[in-house]
Image (cartoon, rainbow, N blue to C red; front, side, top):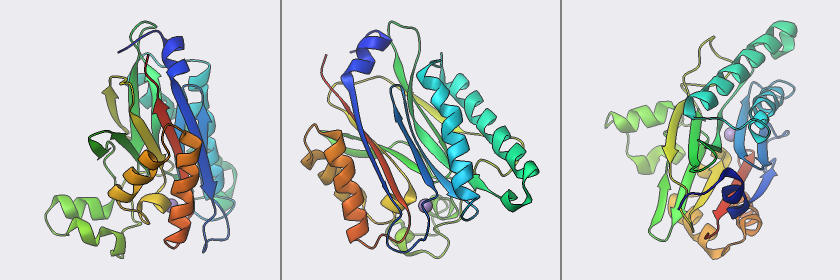
Length: 250
Ligand code: MN
């Protein structure tokens, strides 16, 4: 199931798409779709701030394409560095005070023989895994509504309509210390991943996401395009960004 970093990278094909949506004036989402680094960041703080924060975060994580992480702690350290860079940029420009971003995605970690996925998350952008058995949200949203659901105070079916659905409880650019969640998983032939901003997950339920990914066959770009098109058709109330990965058989 596992192989060298190079052979595993050769098995991972990706596609990506982003759209400003039908309501917002600017696209503050940012994506990275590069060999060994697949991430989405959803900027907060308005035009000229949110889009700066999401770009800064993604630029730091791009280092994974040239310097692979040994393990999830290395990925978390990069997220911490992205946080520091955003905080520094806030200091340099008062117009950027309060800017921040979510950040989530995947990279390959481990020794050259036997690499695994590391998934990382801060905020309410998401990583889903799709296989023949269905769809699973790997990441856990850092959001007020998620905490209400966990406490049994909110029906998950009501989350897409809840007035606090946009309020996140962790982000980059908020405090000096950021605590990303990380997960390590084996690389499995035939699995697919969807990395997305909430502009996708607030418009499409899990089953719709799953069926669009499966319907695109083994073409990750077709899947990314179909997901963004469906989110726009469903309302496009926010910026929509998606990166899709397909893992080929060995
Ligand atoms: Mn968003």
